[in-house]
Length: 114
Image (cartoon, rainbow, N blue to C red):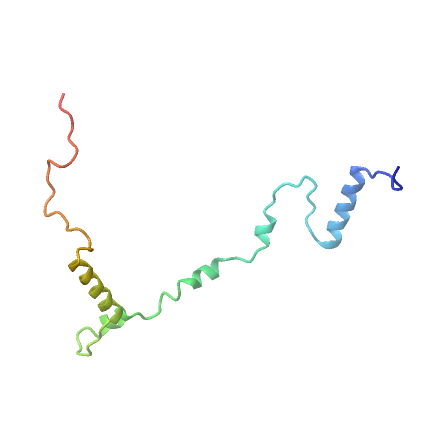
């Protein structure tokens, strides 16, 4: 036989409740999911909002619109490079397929005549 007597469930619950009061944790005797783990975490809204940057930040297109009529010779190098790559792909036949000139009625699904 063991030297310690078997403790009752009621005494163990009292001990757990007292422990929760001492260490300032939630007493949950039925072990139900409470969402406390997620609620303890810091909010993510500001982090996600900061990821996309300041929406009021001045971009190249904005500067180009402001000084459109003056002869500054503003060139967006990233856009020029993108256009050059697209043109070279199109020459090699790797570009987007050509669009149809007009929609033909014979190609689509037809309703059955009864």
